[in-house]
Image (cartoon, rainbow, N blue to C red; front, top):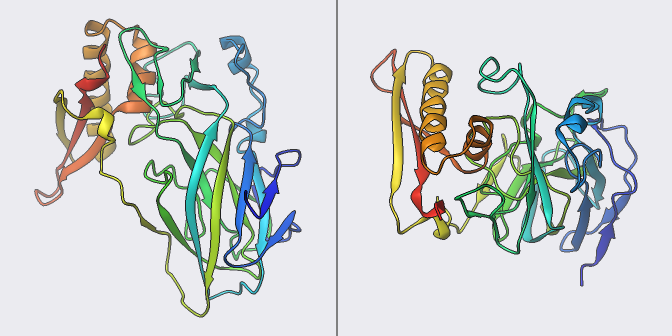
Length: 309
């Protein structure tokens, strides 16, 4: 059992080091944080595209916290051992016209609600996508005073969307204000590199953490230790499709890679363009192949064929 539990009855959707802590823990304690989906509970398993059109974006992201750590002072290092995640059986992903990597490719919103089994979802035809839950946002309160939107990550951590923040990993964060002010949210049941359509599998979830503190050990930014392979084991064994694009603008190269992946997935396994875009957001692995041929950057997008049923 965890030493502490913090429910999601009260959430915050801004960073502000003036917020009082909802909970105080000691170094070495374990804490269970219950989190809404990123919208703060605006969606549910029966939601439709009409709910996406009514979304109140001012309530994004809904974070559980702040949690104060006894003795934490600026210049210390906070260490979070990620012990486990527990989802609630559903998640959602949306296509948002005018936003994300392909803002002009889709003119109508689209909502995919996922039914989550214990370790996989089969909600898209012809695909079995493995789950790899993680917090899109794990962070401490920034040093700068006032309220700050949660979208931009930074030295404090925050909206990192690093899919390797899974159970078994250890995240190091710099303490920037007294007590640290830890917050967590924006949990994803799965996500590809880039989160290209704006969402991973957005899900209400519970995370269990062990919190520790190293005194007078400053850190210039977040640092992650992870025991996991770069790609989940469930994606291995059947090979990969890989699209390659080069451009002086890395974002333009990524756009072409994702468009080619969407085109392929509409033919095999036969998804709609909206479903294919969402599939890329939760399962496509984008990476930089080369930076040395200045000014051109090469981007690869890899799709694990093991996901095909």
